[in-house]
Length: 134
Image 1 (cartoon, one colour):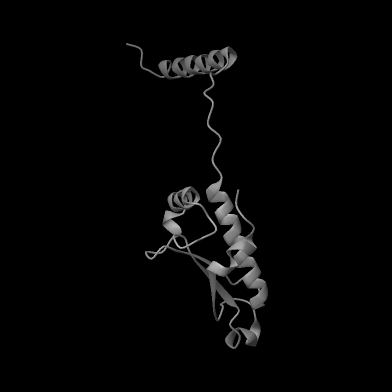
Image 2 (tube, helix red, strand yellow):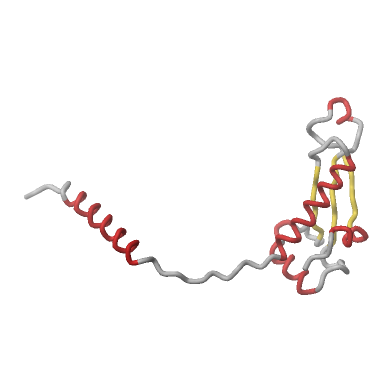
């Protein structure tokens, strides 16, 4: 079970910069883009097993130093972008810790097999009728 997003706050650093996109004249002056940085291995909130699972699932999204970066520049407000980044971060961790249900093997029904074989026979006959008769 993943702790709430607030438990990660001491481990997270936020960095702001000027965002592209909406904002009018404001976009040139205000740093509304928020970049959330979190170091996976240094985390005290997660167990080693959880860290390993996240490392496997999010390997492509981690930097070479082991940081997970989440960027938000959707809103004109820096505070709102910070909230969005935190929500995305928590959702990303939840998804990476979710284990997929094991697949149960099933067999096609007798009707489905019969229908498939009949359609193959029709297709075969159709192509056989196209051949030249000698």
